[in-house]
Length: 314
Image (cartoon, rainbow, N blue to C red; front, top):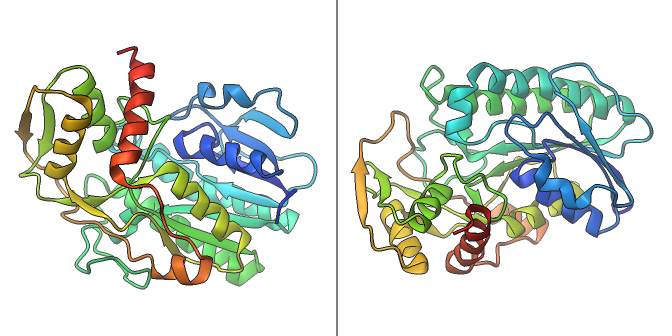
């Protein structure tokens, strides 16, 4: 599957930019498409001018074409942090519906593989733990965060409709809490929140009692999983995440230790529809893709903290 020409929508975002790096490194050509609403050209500035890399500012909810052959289309375009999709609810729904359809059409007319980056949020506040791919989820369709959950659920449904109706070769991944360099310091995700607060010497903010859990996957592991799925014959959906499960209190304590912050912790009310637990069952990824994560939380946080020190000049 190497030496492909791959369109990466959302390629200037956190995950998208790391994906562009990995594709180029293995010999693929990349057309990076982004409108910079939540992504940043800074994330791919080091790739500009590199052979095989093209950068296009484009809103995928508007009609567009890509000149030349396309072997794969990878859809990572969407606001993905609560802060962003709360501010951009309509845009989030549009990119999950109109944008996804435009990209599916691009894949269809080019007879290209289509890779859909979905999310563990399709499981909602899960009543099954850990979450397996055959679990249908527990989502509030009109809740405060429904714009993201339902946009991704619709994207999955649309992707499978194109597969069944038009025989488009699809790959669907469900992403669990990924972290690492190039996250936005103010994106509202728990890892970036904690690290930013700790490096500034502020108390870490925990919502609720801190006993809710998440499973955190370092970005390099996540991208390896993406490529393993892209290159496989599996349609998915397949969970790609780290099954190590931590409470928010445990995460805060680890960030405090690694940064040397002594400002303590403050507690705020838990937002509505916030999942109480989240942990992927990665049996399918291990069995079908030969993939599992290799970077433990302590190591990944250490790398991420160093990135934030530089980014924040602290």
